[in-house]
Image (tube, rainbow, N blue to C red; front, side, top):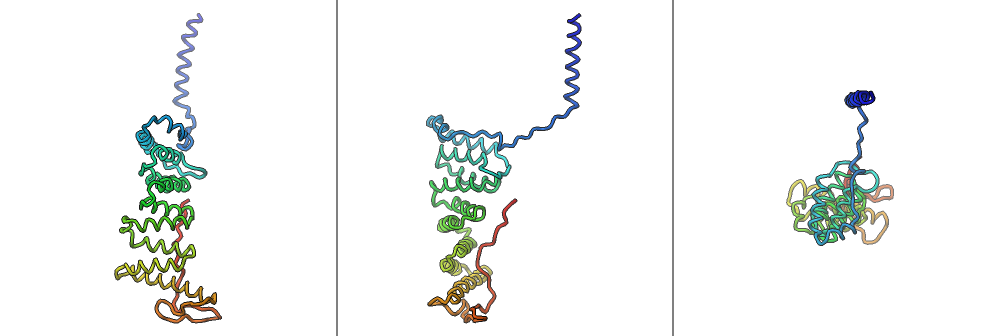
Length: 265
């Protein structure tokens, strides 16, 4: 009798479980890639690579790119940052790891601090590389607000042969940041050189207006602070005028500074 009861109960439970499975919807478990990612201790990876560091670093790179996600980081560093750092430890000359890793962290993952670290690791090996300096400077200035570091890297990029396609705007950007950091005279020299090397046209006209603004700021600061050897005429040869005990330019001008980029939310 017990056998027959068991034979009846077991199929009944199987039928009930199948019905419940089809009709009851359990909540979906969404575990982010940041939470389920697996990162490795750099020292252990170097030990167990057994002399095949380039091969292991390439495998890590391929796996990281295949598993890459677009989840933005709010606090701390992205899991991808630790992967890129491990790759750099295995193969310090893996150029693409720095170039594309830095870009991915900065733009996609919003891990701007991690991006800065990866870029700086790359610049230890490729200190004069145009793209590493250029992208790292962009991240330093527009994302981290590190003007001095950005200015230094932009200047290295400007002296690279690869800077030629960017010669229309890069010198102007550098001179604007230079002016923002307080180096007005150096900014004027940079911009004047850019102006002299620019053919006639709308760009040259804009550069002249910018030169006017820089010179006016330098001269008026000097005159109103009552310093010695101040210039008394503007870029057009017009004398500065004194109104309400303060020197002013005859033309309307505004400070020559970078346009502020809105931080992505």
